[in-house]
Length: 325
Image (cartoon, rainbow, N blue to C red; front, side, top):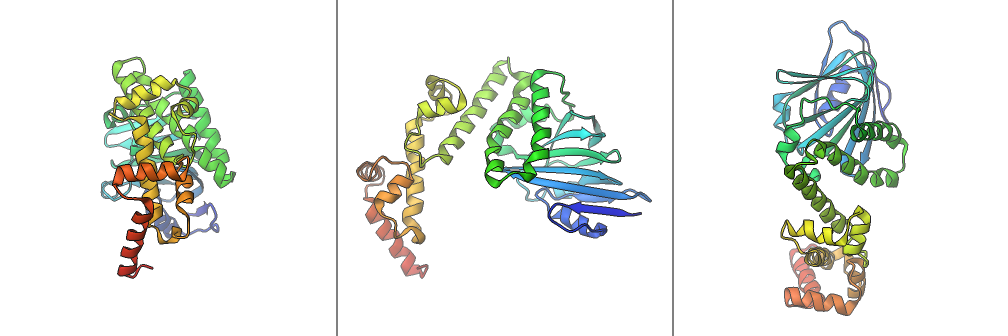
């Protein structure tokens, strides 16, 4: 049995044990089961689109297995979105078998065992998406496991084309370009998952919940923008300002409170960080998106009953007593 193992950024090797070790230390640890008396070929390319890990693999001569033991490991529970570029892929979960042809998409999760098999030379792209980044119910996702998603509708065809094109091109993109692909990738995968129930009350609620999660993440990543507001959020997500308030209200969230609390939390982290000790209070206020020093100080004192400068002094004193400085 021969082997050609060509892993991105690593020398080509013929060591099956090297590949086994590599796979056990991958973002989702997997076991390798070579076929008896078969030549094994594995060529892989990867990219990280923010929280989404993409793995493209062209292989033959072996099955890839997420064993029951591995499924209980500490890996962050993730949805695996697999799309076949050419050839055929097979996903086995228990007694359920899903055969994927070019353009078709299959879903499985990392906290349940599965086996992957492929026809010789098949190329498939797999997106690892942390479940908690999707903001969707586990039941909604579970209902679509073991179901082949055909690219025969406008939505599924668009998602399939995007996933294949992105996986081909992302490994050669800059880090900034890869990071910029996180949001559209998550949006399209959410669209894919909510499409079967889009016109039902459950589906509309799932979509709203997902959008609320995305808005909260949007707020967290743009705290330093003094223009962050319902208007800017509405423009980003192509919805009305009224709808921004409405979907957050379903979670009991007031937008102004959300923005203020995240900004104050970021300010506290900076005030307590010895490496930021030379930054002025005005710099901290600006970095955290407050309009000016006075506004920041009033907001901080109203929330915590102490001035930012006093908070910093006390925090740095504690660091000094512990010997951190």
